[in-house]
Length: 335
Image (cartoon, rainbow, N blue to C red; front, side, top):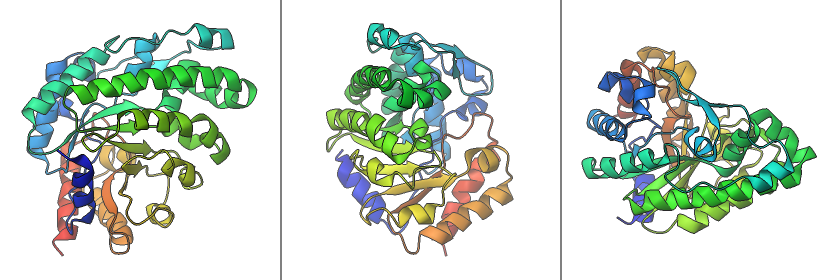
């Protein structure tokens, strides 16, 4: 499939299907826990298929588990039954540790299970594109160094950060190539930690490495959607656009209309219904109201806008809220 042409057609369609970052809520459809899901390729693929059968999305997105890549490097993770896994502690605290850090082979830790899950999902889901979910290089490096320390290190230990970034980018390039080889139509690359940086630091520590991995994998058959749910994204949008992704996905911490004002008309832009306040903890009525509010504010003047979740939808999200989101999208376009 020519994915650039697919993206152009999706952007230009008068009625645009949504593509929320939706995978972990499959646990309730499968009757399992997050711990079971993240360790079983077949359950992940089956969950993606169940979601695809239930919702009329533009594409399917695999697990947006931002711990799996750091775990492959040797980080410790915390796993629970109903929350996404998180990285605890740091494995890079000095420049020497950064230099000694080994780039793991693709397949290390759970990365092999996630690649196999995507391969199986591509066999099961044939009516829409299938995207893999991966972490971005600065967000990965931040987990290796500890998220709060990574921000400080940009000022105090810039060489340590750059060395860690080089290794993160090297691994992610090969990881994304593996997804490409197993049949994925593209990746959603999540770089949320960059959204907490100043525009100047983002241009130095994130932009060149994100661009490096995108340039290594993106072509007509395999595209990259850049996701950043940080609150500084409007200020750093010029840097973000320079990474060269095919589409961009933003979180609920920004005003989407203000963001759209800064983006060229031909660039697809997605977001930004709050995944916690609305999807996880809202009601069908509140999520309908919020979805319609964002669409009414953005769709008439910005035909390159596509409604979506603001980030990964939490595992324990009630399905009646997810269904209400898709119903609200359909309601808007039926007017």
